[in-house]
Length: 154
Image (cartoon, one colour):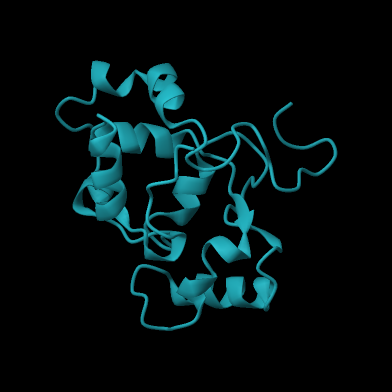
């Protein structure tokens, strides 16, 4: 399985994921491209609940954190929206909502710098190869934890 050598979910951060992707022959630009492919802004509370336990997480807006605490309660399986604008739509509003006012993960200099970066061109256009290499890294491709009828990709 693609994620068998990843650290436990609650210990993952941008640096560890970059090391993992590097071992697979992928660059940080590839990580950004793959992250951009995950535009549905819903997830289970258990994927981030450790970040709700403390107010010390400077990477998450306090208002956003409190709202997620309210929605999640103590149910790790509850599905919540991280994209208030279009949680079931395939668009970029998740990132507009999430960055920079309520980041869903700790920002890095690369992720907060506006505009293109060197090597973004052709290197960033290899999604088919990347997805073949990483299939299974974030679960089954195309699966949605709880799609609402009439919403989301078909």
